[in-house]
Amino acid sequence: MHQRLALAAVVVAALLPTGIRKFPSGTRRECEPEGRGTPPRHWIGCRGDPGPARPLTGLELVLLGRPVDLDRASAEDLAAVPGIGPGLAAEVVRDREERGPFGKPDALRRVRGIGPARMERARPWIRTTPP
Image 1 (spheres, rainbow, N blue to C red):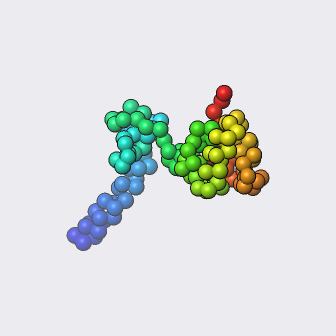
Image 2 (cartoon, rainbow, N blue to C red):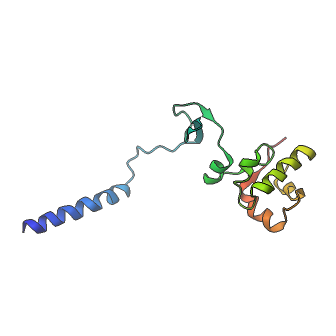
Image 3 (tube, one colour):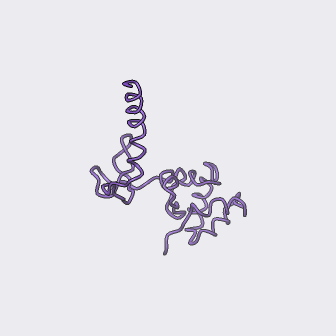
C-alpha cells in the first residue's frame, strides 16, 4: 500500500508543473523587447529593465519576427534576413551608399543578385524608413 501511495505522489509531483502552466497566474508581464547591456554581456530585455539600452541587431530583429530597416541596417544586420547572405548584404549596403536610400522595400530589386524569388523570401523581413 505504501508503495502505491509513493508512486502516486511521484506521478502527481511530476505532472504538477504542467498543470500549473496551463493556468496563467496573471503575474506574467508582456513587454516591448529592447536591447540591453553592452557586448559581450548583452541581452534582449524589456523597455525599462536595468542596464544601458542599445538597438537590436538584425539577427535579434529577425528572431523576434520584426523587419530590418533597409535604409539604416549594416551589412551584418542585413545578412540575418532570409534570402540575403553576407555577400549580398554587402552589395545592398554598397548600392545604398552609391544610389541613396531605397525608399520602399520593392526597390531592393535594383541590387544585382536580387530577383523575384529572393525578393519574395526577404519581403516579410525588410522595411524602409519613411522620409
